[in-house]
Length: 170
Image 1 (cartoon, rainbow, N blue to C red):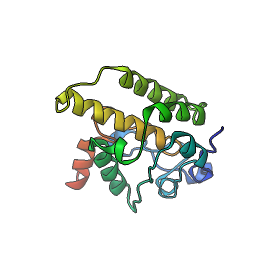
Image 2: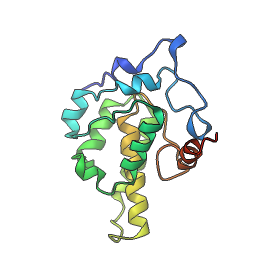
Image 3: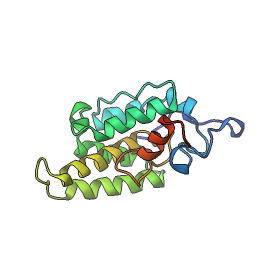
Image 4: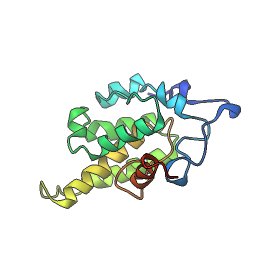
């Protein structure tokens, strides 16, 4: 199986999405933009192999997308709600995104997390591990369009940058 990485995420050089972005780094791959992310569709072969029931987030503005992404990362039931089974997801993603070094690194981290013993149910470690797992899963799903998510916070793009944007500061 090969993933076609949806051609909507590949843009000609003159129409690329901006650098800068939230957290001071580019939010999108050099050959992609937010406009491509808005039309992003999951590869049907990847969906079939992984068994996920995830629907890409609809958003008219990048800030709306980031809010939805951060909410999904914080949701302790995200994997269950989207029928994401790590025993199927990781091998399917490895096959679909085999040529993407950043995604392979995220999947390596994800595999390490899934092999650790489960933390106590309502512990801080359980919350943190859930958020990191959700971030890595979303980073993998959106790897065709977005750059790696900001890893300084447990959430996607920097929560601090999002908060500054809401207050009208850069």
